[in-house]
Length: 76
Image 1 (cartoon, helix red, strand yellow):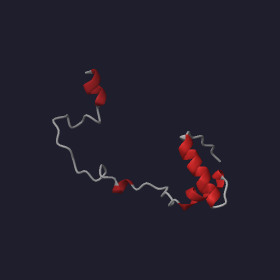
Image 2: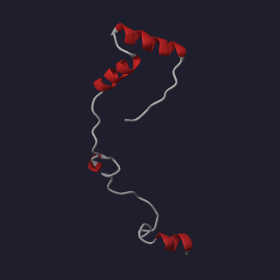
Image 3: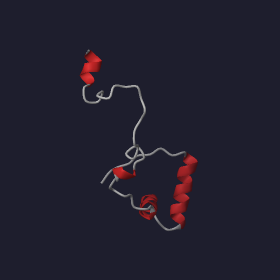
């Protein structure tokens, strides 16, 4: 479990307490129930959907072997 500390304006904290009381929960329970309502985050990342991945090329005057022989161009 991860601990989280946040700073709230007093007015926001009081609103949070009021909302939690209205539904009969502690502030902690109220926040937990709100988090459970959030959509699940997809854990996997599909690189093929990344726009950079699908780029076909970049026109440049750079040497064509720059990524293969960087030391040649950095150190001479």
